[in-house]
Length: 634
Image (cartoon, rainbow, N blue to C red):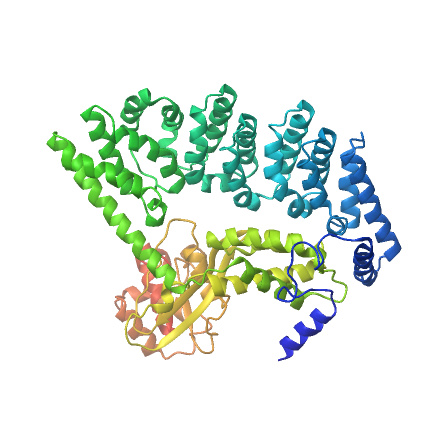
């Protein structure tokens, strides 16, 4: 109740409009501003800025300056567009909505009769791109128009469009790439070759500034950009080759690196398929195969199965079989299975060569298994997912911002473009099940800081991330996991980091009595770090030592520092054990294999295995509820 009251008080202290009561379209009801409405907007700005300690007259003057700068640019003046960006940065990007900058830029870009207005609008967009991420909500939605203007009849407009798009993409937040990519795909289908070329050049630029996001988009990039490799225009083909070369290098699979260039080449030159298949068939696959690598291999494999020579078909089936064994995540393959399965079925049923049919049959069976596993994973995931819609996310974001906002916050109708943009970014994060706090801070707090204090924006970001995760993400499979009867010792959800690296994010840990649990993972994933965190009582929600005693057993007996100690002396040298009866200590040492003679040996005479047994005996004497054993058999 107290939290609800605090949220209501915070909401009352700010000009924040209810989406249910107001059909947001960027402005309050009534459409575009009349002079009277414009004055009321400035009065609204007056209240918000005055509460932040800024004189209303000064703010209105800054807004007026932005409006005049924009007017002059749209009239074809030679003003430096960087001045517009600087003025917007000083006044705050909310001023762009007060003076209807986005609408005016759209109208100018669409003005087929005034080349000066089109060029001026493009120069204005380039100037606003210099503001950085705060201006993205106003500039990114204009990207399709920028791409369209690359095919303008006037050379000056075309040049300005290329410069504006380059500036926009160059300043783009890497997590905004999923929002931009569909715009580029659409431009690659444009009727004007300049728009296609421009989109491909921007894709190449993104491959440099946001490599991880471009790699994740390879399954969509390959079919869209691949069509441009066979475009009639040489300029488009060249741009497609350069863009896809840059994107293909990001596939992340070292095994296929020598074949990347040939695989790209044979998309445009089918005659090279046979040689490329032969080269790829000599590859030894050892690294796990993920979606980006599959994206660049599948077009070649599809053509290999359709090749006229049976040996090439057989080699293609072998490649698919070897590759499929290393697909750890079946979901990575779901997009490509419909393209591979029909070809393998044809090879299995129609090819005369029995060896080719045998290999194709085995590959087909492997892919069918992967398809079944992927379908099951999707069903399991769907059981816990309540896919958030844009209106739901907008409502949740507004509520989290209202709860975190202080009296000086300025979230009113002018924040609408920014809130819409935040929703677009977070929908992509939810789709990819990315709930890392750093990414949500970038996508939420980084934009809300324009309208509220940094600590308030951070609080809103954390609350919004938590709410989205709870409502939109499938819970861990452990939620419904039951390993049989037994007292539950621990059941907690936590995150774990080491240095700047997140090792576990919202992981669930359940432990019961009478069980042995194994931590399996490659070096460096955090197995020892997790056990040390449990032992040090640093795992959120794990029962405290007074309720659940845990002992961490590792290779920590340093005999060279305790040369004079015997085995029995080592136990009694521990402050937690020196009060125990001698008979009890002797009995436990005997349980782990120490004879009467060995108990009198010096520590320096013990091998690594016996030191581990001694550490285990010490843990048993501590009467631990949970033993944490770090590589006990190493």
